[in-house]
Image 1 (cartoon, rainbow, N blue to C red):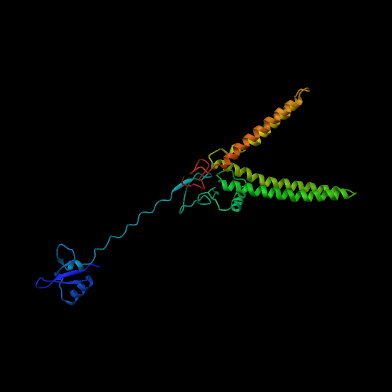
Image 2 (cartoon, rainbow, N blue to C red; image 1 turned 135 degrees about the horizontal axis):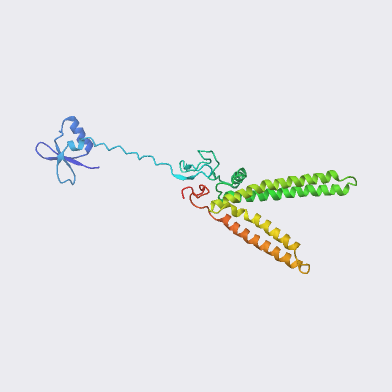
Length: 282
C-alpha cells in the first residue's frame, strides 16, 4: 500500500498517510483539493484532487459478432448445405429429414442398432465402429441361432427315427425351420452389405467394390460350369482344378483387399458421398 505526504500551509511535509486517510482529511476540511501530495519515491508533488478524482470508466467490452455455423458438407439425399450446431452434426438433415451417417453413437450395441436401422440405406458413410459393431453382433447372433436350430433339427431327427409311422410332420417342421433360418440369415446379410457399401464410402471408395465379389463368384462359377461341360474326356479333372483354383485365389485376394479397406480410418471432412461423422470439419 502506498504512503503519501502532504504539504501544510508552511510547505512542511506531513505524513505518512494512506490514500484513505487523505480522503478523510479532505472530507473533514483539514485539506483542500489543491493540497500538494506525493507518495514515497515520487519525483514531484501533485494536487490532492488527482488522488480523489473518480477513475475513468473503462469502455464496455465489445461483444464479438457471432461466428456463423461452419458448413460441414451437403446432404447426400437433397444436396442442401448442412451446418454444425454447437460443434455437433445433426442426426437428420434439417431440409429433408434424411438420416445422416453423422449419427454416430457411442458403444458397440448402439452402432449395431444404427446399422440395422439403415438396412436399405446405401447412401452416406459409415465409420469403422458402425461397420465392425454390426459384423460382431451379426456373427454372434448367426452362430447362436444356428446352434439352436441344429439342436432342434437333431431332436426332430431322433423323433423321425423312433417314429415308425408317417414322418411327414417332423420333416415339415424341419423344412419350416430351414426357411426361418434362411430368412434370418438374409435379414442379417442385407444390413451387412449396405453397411459395407457405406464403409467404403467413408474411405472415399465406390460402394460397387463391395458388390464385385458376388459378381465375380457368379462369373467364375459360370466359367467353371462351362469348362466342366466342355472338358475333354481325357483331362476333365485338370480343367476343374484350374478353374476352381482361379475362383478360390481370386475371391481370396479380393476379400483381403476389401478387408484392408474396411480397416482404414475415415476420410477427413465431407466427400462426394456425404459428411464425415468422425471428422466433420476435416
